[in-house]
Image 1 (cartoon, rainbow, N blue to C red):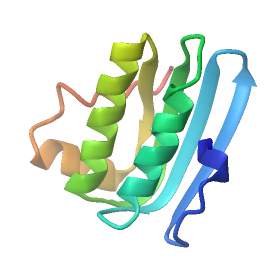
Image 2: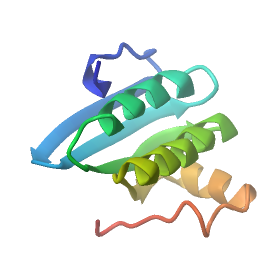
Image 3: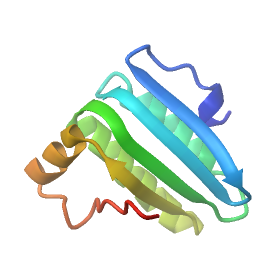
Length: 116
């Protein structure tokens, strides 16, 4: 099951596109918290389980809320991707994402790459 096939609560919207082979663009909007994080994690795991190596570009600009549970999903996705030869790129942060990344001291780990 891929990310686009996993039903998500109404307070989290995910749009998945495959603009070219080997690239997955995921736009996440709404609230990423303890309720929605497991479902996003399962979808990202499915996208990262695809061969050949893939770049997963996560656009987080539409998140109005992101909890520590959401950050854990992003960290786990990056670790799992690296272990499988994939790459997760965080392309855009909302203000809510900036705040929680800063508050948790993860600015050097979860780096926004707006031009990716």
